[in-house]
Image 1 (cartoon, rainbow, N blue to C red):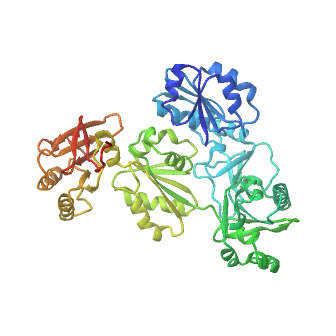
Image 2 (image 1 turned 90 degrees about the horizontal axis):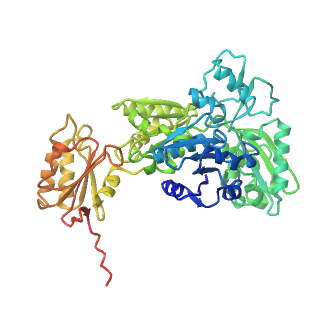
Image 3 (image 1 turned 90 degrees about the vertical axis):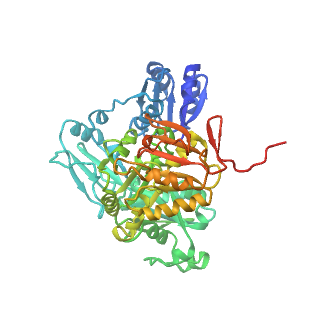
Length: 553
């Protein structure tokens, strides 16, 4: 997404510098007018009254208008002004407020009462009488929920009731009526084959004709599939859908109802459109619309057997929004179900909404948590399992991948990286990891102490900087002392040692000391301990492990 922050005063510009978006400074009216059709969101450093006067003449269609957020120049309030749901302004306001330490102001009715917003349900596009059904939800009437797409579940967060209002999950182009909201699942995949000179308008019209003839909804088309040589063809790209391509060899292995000898002779496969649609739609897919031809193109439409379940194991870094990656934020926002240890879920409160199911899990239930996340993904849900730091460093990614083959074979597992504790701590200490280093956990709950001790001795003998995770807890009080003694046998007492507790969190503490002076009693479970190598130095109070670069003459 393209987000632009616009300021007109020095105070506004100073506030905008704290945000990770494009920045423009100058005339608000002229800048906003020039950006209006080019961006996904605008953050205006101006009072709401001025923002309303600037934006009002530009508003046309909530489906296409960007989301607009405004922040006062003191950084106290961040207001979702317009485009709250469709334009993403509500989510943007929460994100900006978290980055600035401000109070978000979101007045959308569903957000105000914590109700699921039909137009924000992950994986669906809302149509029909969304306003009418939403009004019923706000009045306390749960709608009837009907699903007429085989294999497709109802949204996880939508509570069904007696109606009389209805929510219908459907990919057909049904005529809408009052009291009925339609949820369009991403159930259809379009296969396209075309000549090198095919016109984009010709392919677009052919697709619309195929959809209309079969009574299918354009909003449910999730993907366009084609042969690899046509992946960037203008007629394919112009459809405005994600593109998946296959080689002729891959397409030739798909059995289709209408193979063509002519296509085989030209591109080496009996089918492009039908084969690509079925292959991209996945196992169990059916051909909803056989191939339709025009002079220069062919389209076919396949229906997925169910939603493609996905599990994202998300590393949140230290936790503050400023140190959380955009990919992590996207994965959490796109999930139907968000699960994790409760304190980690609190770190992403600004990313969550009532249209998601949030499942906290106690510490110690890691196996249950991973299994549950995989099982939900296997049912076709989009799941985010959140961890602090990096998901693959002493976190949930390894456990999830160990279980995935047996618990949920075929489910796509994505690992979203984050800033791990050693890197966060090192940045606050200086540059202690500037040369070779090792990371060792001192928790002997899952690893025997004999193994940990052997690894510490190997790191000490190799003269590596060592970052110690899980150094000390209420029940484990002696391991850090023992580890420091082991490393002390290989390096002198004045070797720098860094202690960072709650890196980039409100209770953060940073201490530089030495092997001789370090006090294990000051260390807890949220402390990362970095023990320098013999080459590590303290320079102006910062830990530095030189890489060996030669200074410029």
